[in-house]
Image (cartoon, one colour):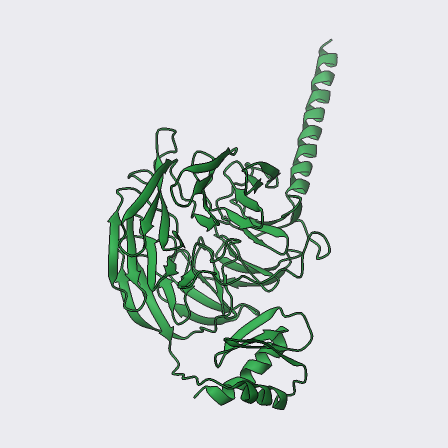
Length: 487
């Protein structure tokens, strides 16, 4: 009998060991990096980020456009820069400004909302909320919208008793137009049409009327919503702290699909990052250290890539590349179709904030207080600045605005350069002399020229002329025109 019991116990132990080994292998396999394909749910003809439609609005919301691509299209602003003004915000500025109507709009972590002149860095108005803030505002039709968390302390444990607010301000005076109570929110708002979209700690996504703040719809998700929502066409995309990513109907809030981070030992990753949408994909990082690509139509996982540390950073997307930073101190450029590592750069500290791409340079900052500019094509170091913490820069037509720990810097290009306008005939003559035969005038105000027969994927402004075409053609054409107009 005793031998039988021992044998039975041994068999049970062997079965448990086998089950444990099988579970370990299952999780190890399920958490592996997934390699993607350029032929599956990847739209190569996706248009680049579009400029804001409203006159006077240079950078309307967190991530620049509604897809949150973090790419300023058409700018040629490039380092090195020199500082022309500094604004002291008195406490941490975690999220970057919106730029519109000649002003920067942003809030510090202590809950003070500022409007600052873009030309001189002087305060136009401020609003003291007595609440915590960790989000960028959005600007639309001469109204600026900001979300607020609970009152201090800012790191309170989430609770149904805590409240947040979204507030609409007149851009000129800071006068409050309306407020609406929501849960505490770190979700940078975005405006599309007549609605504002935002999430909150209570796991809700809100669509509010732009003019009154009254809800169109509210959708409850499985976990806290801390990132912003991205909008592309008729769909809204967002991640939450349950480890899920969702596609919602922009019109009704109905959940169209729901995807999940890959399983791993120690628990599934959560999504703090705001998604970026491009090429028919949704790109989003997670606390499991991975950057994910989901099909925007189906929600199917198309690729995943480990970074070696938390990914709180929201991605920037530019020319078939996805840029993202990690707590591993490494900044990555990934192939947007497959997730393959194009290049990586070792920085001086953890990277928590989100990058920005301007004129072929990708900017990011580290928690060690340094901002970097790299060549977005190669990863080569171009420029650094001895301040920064989270999301590094925004820009308008003439200046870059760098976000330090508790300061905002107005920067202009250091190189002295004056440009004169070229006539249509002079521009065409210079481009033909450079070897181009296929030239087409596609606009006159401003002058716009298409080079070559390829579908234009690149654009560059030079000498008050917009050049379109394949990347090598645009670069060569810009160089030819610059010889005539830059002195």
